[in-house]
Image (cartoon, rainbow, N blue to C red):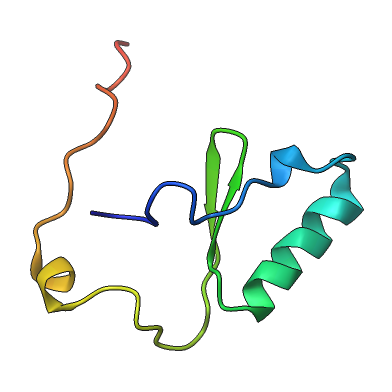
Length: 75
């Protein structure tokens, strides 16, 4: 699996007010708690923690990349 389990990323879209200040404050708080994944509606934000975190075992690191979720757009 790539990414957090469902519901583990928190959803900042559920905030009463979703403006730039609230968004940045929510991201900062989650980053300080080492929660590098955050949902904002149907968008997943992943922040670089600048340190190793015990999120994935060797089986995930060694796995081949996942297939794209959407087919490429026709030109």
